[in-house]
Image (cartoon, rainbow, N blue to C red; front, side):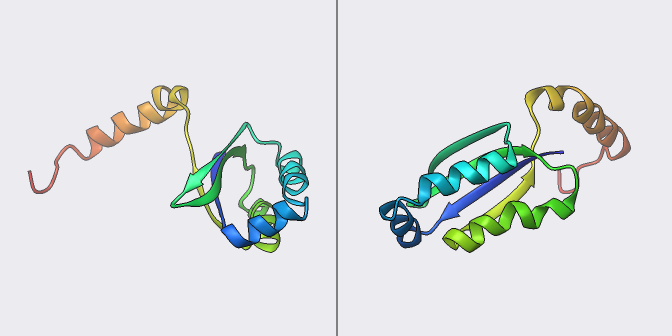
Length: 109
């Protein structure tokens, strides 16, 4: 299943890793192990962050995905299922249509 990992890295911990020359090698190793479909680096509420899209075959993989970020950087993570536009137009679209038919009434309107 395609998943989105959102990593928020504390400034002080990440600054220390950058100054020590350890940040880039850490990120490169984590990404090499995870083999993501895509990885984007940005900021979230003033902290360095990343959005990483990857395939998770089983929920038992979660510790291997999360722990490097926790242990190395004291990062905060969020992991969520994610879809592409093709997913939405295909199997997910059919599921939405089935839900509309099964639950046509909107409460409060």
